[in-house]
Structures are given as C-alpha cells and as structure tokens.
Image (cartoon, rainbow, N blue to C red; front, side, top):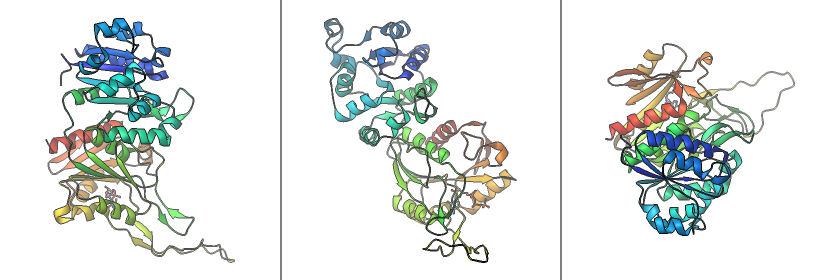
Amino acid sequence: MSLAGKRVLLIVTGGIAAFKALELIRLLRKGGCGVTCVLTKGGAQFVTPLSLQALSEHHVYTDLFSLTDESEMGHIQLSRSADLVVVAPASADILAKMAAGLADDLASTLLLATDKAVLVAPAMNVRMWGHAATRANMATLQARGVAVVGPDEGAMACNEFGAGRLSEPPVILAAIEAMLAGARPLAGKHAIVTSGPTHEPIDPVRYIANRSSGRQGHAIAAALAALGARVTLVSGPVTVPDPAGVTVRRIETAAEMLAACRAALPADIAVFAAAVADWRVASASDQKIKKTPDGAPPALALTPNPDILATIAAAGADRPRLVVGFAAETHDLRAHAQDKRRRKNADWIVANDVNPSTGIMGGAENEIHLVTAEGIEDWPRLAKDEVAGRLAARIAKVFA
Ligand code: CTP
C-alpha cells in the first residue's frame, strides 16, 4: 500500500525513545506521506522542534495557546486535517490523559477533538507499563478502538529488562500503512489463542510443566488484535506481559484450558500455540507428599490430558472456520507435522524444531514451516513477533 498523498499527524511525547520518532518521520516522508508533528513539553526534553521540522519539512506545533499557530491552523482543524493520528512514543502520561479525556495541552486536546483513527506506540519503564493504572488505561483505549503497536520487550535505558520499549520505526510504519489502507481485515472476527505451558499438579506444591514461555502465542494474539480481531487469549502460567487489547483467560491445567476454550466459543479462528502437558498425575495428592523413611520415591501414575486442539477441531457446528495447531518436534519434523494436521483435523500446522540447539523454545526467534492442505512453506528464521505478524496476515487472507 502506498503512503503517497496521505498525511499523518504525529504526536511525540516525552521519553528517551522520542529520538526514534525522527527515523519514523524519515520513513514516512520517504514513502511520500505528509507528516505534521506535535511535540509535547515532555517530548521537547528529548528532541527539538527544529529536528522534527527539518525532517517533516513542516511547521511543528508545540503550544495550545500559541496565537500564531491558532491563526495558521486552529487545533480542531489540526486534529482533523490528517488521515491518521499517531502517538509515538506514547508515554504513560498521554495514555492516562487519553483514557481520562483530559485536554490540558495541545496533544491531549487534539486527541480529544479528533475524528480520525488513532494509533499509539507506547514506550515507558517496564513497571509503568505493567502498572494496574496503565493496564486499565490501555483496556479503556482499546475498547474505544484506539490501535496499539508494541511495546517491545528488551533491555531498557533505565537498566531494567522487560516490556516497554518503543517498537522499532519500521514496525510502527507497517502499522501505519495497515491502518491507512483500512487494513483491519479481521474486524468482526473472534479468535481464540492458547499460549504458554500448562501446570499439572502432583500435590499442592509440586507440578509437571515444560519450558514454553508463551512468547509466540502471546505475539500471535497481539498480531491478530492488531488486524482488528477480537481475541480471547487462554494462557497458562507465563511471565510475558499480557498483550494490549486482548481478553486474557488465565488457567493452569490442560483441563482448565479446554474449559476456557469451550467457554470462549463461538470463534472464527483458533490458534493452539500452547505447549499443553500430554499427561497429568492421575490422582494428585491434596496434601504435600512427604519423603518416606526408606527414601523410596513415590510412583506417579499418569493419565492422558484431553487434546484441546483435537477437541475444538471436532466441535461440529462450533468448529472455528480456521483451526491452526503447532507441532513442536525434535526430529522428522515435516512428516510428524503433516501427520498431526490430519490426525487432529487442523487446517494448518505451524511446525518448529525445538531441539535445544535451535534455541527456539523459550527464545526470541522462531523458524517455522507452515503445513497446509496445499503443502509446506518454509519460512526464514524470524523474531517471534514477525512470525506472529506474518501468520496473522496469512490468516487474514483466508477471511479476505
Ligand atoms: N495440543 C492441545 N492439547 C493437548 C496437546 C497438544 O491442544 N493436550 C495442541 C498444541 O497446542 C499444538 C498441537 O496440539 O497446537 C501439537 O502439540 P504437540 O505437543 O506438538 O503434539 P502432540 O499431540 O503432543 O504429539 P507428540 O507428543 O507426538 O509430539
């Protein structure tokens, strides 16, 4: 999709990531997109109006009550003259103002007055992003239709690690392009995504689990939501943050995961990315199992867990139109994946090699092979976010 002839109103708020707005402007301009910048007081601590002006080749607006600005272009008009309003970086403060409907500076006033779609790219400290207030503000904004890109996870300027880094400019650019193209192709569709491991209790303090981080499943949930789907994410115990704009159902065991998936039906799309434990302890003890004087280890009798993917794929009239499973294999990947697709009645299987040497399980990257009725597509090794984006785009094609 071409950006040419489109105009973006870019609001730059305070944060160390504000410098990335410069690269975003450069990319937008390169694509032929007009950019008008609004710089908040906080943003001006990190980038200068002059830099924004030089790159956008346009006057930069900074002050709500500037008489010159008002005579040139009133703030109501400014909020409506663009095709899209983008807030990047979006600080915790601007998100809170947007959620509360405050209008105490130019940026917040424009955001309250605009009749255009709004995309926010949050960037803040990991604790601020995880704070209940920010969570609630994001939920409010997304319920109102504000689109979100990021934030990413990684090392932060404040020497902490976690979610809160501004998405990279090319990723924000792709989100802008999708929105300008009216690309919410999954609007009105409901997707169920399972993610993470399950914990199967042995006794009240011990459980059987696996190394799944939930990163891939969570990224898929976020990517589907970004394309407009309503997403129910059924997640086992994970430490990755909840993706913005999805409904999260937290469960521990496979039985609970199946119940949560069933409760979330009907759905158009189901993606089973969870690493579900195949077995559970047949009769978990309700008291902590004590060591015996002779030191003999307890024998744990296991019983199979329900296969959630196979159960939902066999749900008759309730079967989602597109059922996508995962196959985590350490050998004979293609043959096992093709067999799994047929056996579990899935439409697609996303197969990946989880040999420890690949670093995929629990890592940040994935190299997948998409098994469909038509054949097998080998994808390059990509960040899990990118795999998620591509998969969501592929899913959207089915519903085009
Ligand atoms: N799955 C599920 N419920 C289970 C087990 C697996 O929904 N009880 C789903 C997974 O989420 C994944 C797919 O089935 O989408 C494949 O899971 P995997 O563990 O790779 O395959 P298995 O069926 O367990 O086969 P095997 O143990 O032979 O690899």
